[in-house]
Image (cartoon, rainbow, N blue to C red; front, side):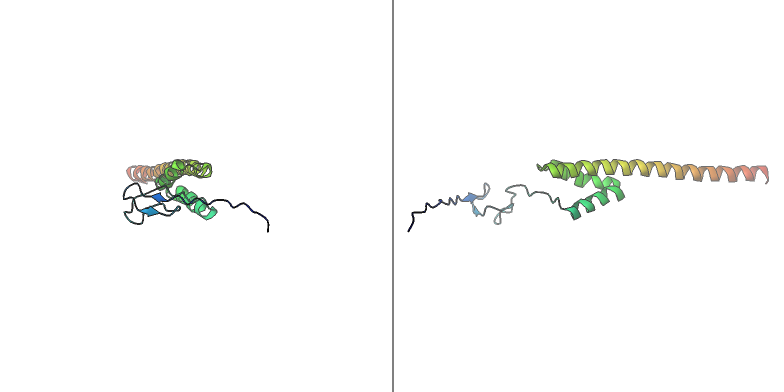
Length: 122
Protein backbone atom coordinates (compact mmCIF):
# COMPACT_ATOMS: atom_id res chain seq x y z
CA UNK A 1 0.00 0.00 0.00
CA UNK A 2 1.20 3.44 -0.97
CA UNK A 3 1.89 6.11 1.55
CA UNK A 4 -0.64 8.84 0.62
CA UNK A 5 -0.21 12.09 2.46
CA UNK A 6 -3.35 13.35 4.09
CA UNK A 7 -4.29 16.97 4.03
CA UNK A 8 -4.96 18.16 7.53
CA UNK A 9 -8.36 19.70 7.91
CA UNK A 10 -8.42 22.63 10.21
CA UNK A 11 -11.75 23.20 11.74
CA UNK A 12 -11.23 26.52 13.39
CA UNK A 13 -14.19 27.38 15.55
CA UNK A 14 -15.91 30.67 14.92
CA UNK A 15 -17.41 32.51 17.85
CA UNK A 16 -19.97 35.29 18.01
CA UNK A 17 -18.18 38.50 19.01
CA UNK A 18 -21.22 39.54 21.06
CA UNK A 19 -22.29 36.46 23.03
CA UNK A 20 -19.29 34.15 22.33
CA UNK A 21 -21.40 31.15 21.26
CA UNK A 22 -19.98 28.78 18.64
CA UNK A 23 -21.12 29.50 15.07
CA UNK A 24 -21.00 27.59 11.84
CA UNK A 25 -18.96 29.13 9.03
CA UNK A 26 -21.93 30.20 6.92
CA UNK A 27 -23.90 32.10 9.55
CA UNK A 28 -24.78 35.69 8.76
CA UNK A 29 -26.54 36.17 12.10
CA UNK A 30 -25.86 34.59 15.47
CA UNK A 31 -28.59 32.00 16.16
CA UNK A 32 -28.32 32.73 19.89
CA UNK A 33 -28.28 36.52 20.25
CA UNK A 34 -29.47 37.49 16.74
CA UNK A 35 -26.69 39.99 16.05
CA UNK A 36 -25.35 40.33 12.52
CA UNK A 37 -22.01 38.53 12.15
CA UNK A 38 -21.28 39.32 8.51
CA UNK A 39 -23.14 41.04 5.73
CA UNK A 40 -25.33 38.85 3.56
CA UNK A 41 -24.52 39.27 -0.16
CA UNK A 42 -27.22 40.86 -2.29
CA UNK A 43 -29.07 38.78 -4.87
CA UNK A 44 -27.82 39.46 -8.42
CA UNK A 45 -29.97 36.91 -10.25
CA UNK A 46 -31.66 37.91 -13.50
CA UNK A 47 -35.16 37.84 -12.00
CA UNK A 48 -34.07 40.04 -9.10
CA UNK A 49 -32.49 42.49 -11.55
CA UNK A 50 -35.69 42.64 -13.60
CA UNK A 51 -37.80 43.31 -10.52
CA UNK A 52 -35.44 46.01 -9.24
CA UNK A 53 -35.34 47.68 -12.66
CA UNK A 54 -39.15 47.63 -12.89
CA UNK A 55 -39.44 49.27 -9.47
CA UNK A 56 -36.96 51.93 -10.60
CA UNK A 57 -38.98 52.65 -13.75
CA UNK A 58 -42.53 52.39 -12.44
CA UNK A 59 -42.10 53.81 -8.93
CA UNK A 60 -39.34 56.36 -9.44
CA UNK A 61 -38.47 57.49 -5.91
CA UNK A 62 -38.83 53.94 -4.57
CA UNK A 63 -36.10 52.81 -6.98
CA UNK A 64 -33.48 54.64 -4.95
CA UNK A 65 -33.76 52.31 -1.95
CA UNK A 66 -32.61 49.15 -3.79
CA UNK A 67 -30.09 51.24 -5.74
CA UNK A 68 -28.29 52.32 -2.58
CA UNK A 69 -28.52 48.79 -1.18
CA UNK A 70 -26.77 47.43 -4.26
CA UNK A 71 -24.22 50.25 -4.34
CA UNK A 72 -23.13 49.45 -0.76
CA UNK A 73 -22.33 45.85 -1.71
CA UNK A 74 -18.75 44.81 -2.39
CA UNK A 75 -19.60 42.79 -5.51
CA UNK A 76 -18.86 44.72 -8.76
CA UNK A 77 -21.93 43.18 -10.41
CA UNK A 78 -24.12 44.49 -7.59
CA UNK A 79 -22.59 47.96 -7.94
CA UNK A 80 -23.47 47.94 -11.67
CA UNK A 81 -27.06 46.99 -10.80
CA UNK A 82 -27.19 49.88 -8.34
CA UNK A 83 -25.92 52.36 -10.93
CA UNK A 84 -28.46 51.14 -13.51
CA UNK A 85 -31.21 51.56 -10.90
CA UNK A 86 -30.18 55.15 -10.24
CA UNK A 87 -30.06 55.98 -13.96
CA UNK A 88 -33.47 54.37 -14.55
CA UNK A 89 -34.94 56.20 -11.57
CA UNK A 90 -33.61 59.56 -12.79
CA UNK A 91 -34.94 58.93 -16.32
CA UNK A 92 -38.31 57.93 -14.91
CA UNK A 93 -38.50 61.02 -12.69
CA UNK A 94 -37.60 63.31 -15.61
CA UNK A 95 -40.21 61.69 -17.85
CA UNK A 96 -42.82 61.95 -15.12
CA UNK A 97 -42.11 65.65 -14.60
CA UNK A 98 -42.19 66.29 -18.36
CA UNK A 99 -45.53 64.51 -18.90
CA UNK A 100 -47.06 66.08 -15.79
CA UNK A 101 -46.08 69.58 -16.91
CA UNK A 102 -47.45 68.88 -20.41
CA UNK A 103 -50.72 67.66 -18.88
CA UNK A 104 -51.00 70.72 -16.61
CA UNK A 105 -50.28 73.04 -19.54
CA UNK A 106 -52.94 71.30 -21.61
CA UNK A 107 -55.55 71.67 -18.85
CA UNK A 108 -54.52 75.30 -18.36
CA UNK A 109 -54.94 76.00 -22.09
CA UNK A 110 -58.38 74.37 -22.13
CA UNK A 111 -59.54 76.37 -19.11
CA UNK A 112 -58.19 79.61 -20.59
CA UNK A 113 -59.95 78.91 -23.91
CA UNK A 114 -63.26 78.19 -22.15
CA UNK A 115 -62.97 81.35 -20.05
CA UNK A 116 -62.17 83.43 -23.14
CA UNK A 117 -65.11 81.92 -25.04
CA UNK A 118 -67.43 82.71 -22.12
CA UNK A 119 -66.25 86.30 -21.88
CA UNK A 120 -66.63 86.90 -25.61
CA UNK A 121 -70.18 85.53 -25.57
CA UNK A 122 -69.51 82.82 -28.11
